[in-house]
Image (tube, rainbow, N blue to C red; front, side):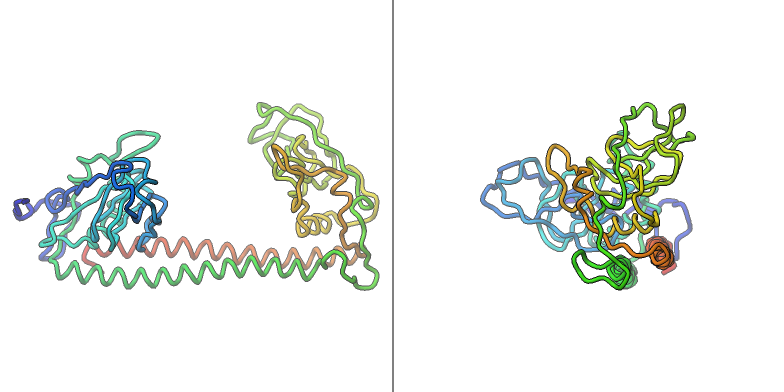
Length: 392
């Protein structure tokens, strides 16, 4: 039976509201380690929580996976409902959970039990997610490649301790505010998906499906009637750098710069991934070199707009049916057999101008969505920061 002494009041980093006090975590909580060895209970079914089942910095119930006892191949921690699971590995990941069920967890989690007469589990869980504690933990680790919070630093950590009724109020307030943020994140995710669908819809409207009827003065042509391809040439990785007067393109676009070689491409052209990221289409800016993982248009057989052809090829996904092997690949002859819709040069340029305008709008939408995501993250951190200063 643990002796229940009142926590010792101590000086903290900032002044607390009246009735609050600073205490060390080790005075109001302890590590409740109940380990389960591999195959110790082979016939029992467990709810398992690994680091991947807990979202970084988010106040959400963890999503456990169901495992049979005989599937457990390494030691795990058994936990009971209401235990705080603190992710000790890479504390900047901010992985904290307070599951309302019993189960087992990775030993990367520290199972923390609290003195319920002075500290509520969910209050502690919220504090461990706060920016101040994440910063503290990140500066008190051991190990460089796999940093983990030092146990002594964890138990010496100062936490602001209000009365139980105030803790309950703070937890309820934080939960309500973070629920609104969760709903905003869901709406943002839907908006991102809608934006991606918008671009695909616009492309589908601009480029008919192969085999369908075309508008007047359009025609279906094989790519072999449009251009001639040539494979790129090998270049050593040691020749690549972050600067140089010659761009180097690989199977999925720009891979670096080089100098001191004769460029392969002297005018802007299209590069197509040949091996690996096969079928990827990029416009190469001259002067440039193309690696042997890609091929490029070395000659045009008809009048066409470079950007139009690139957009058509990207939309029709040349890599949809690659040749399988050690690495997926696509050959020049396979590319030549594909059909694309071709209109007059003037019409091609009109379509490109329209699609570029739409793409700029899509880009602006996505940038706004990224900014919104960052703002939601900052708001969430601000809520937690205010909660433990008595400002919520």
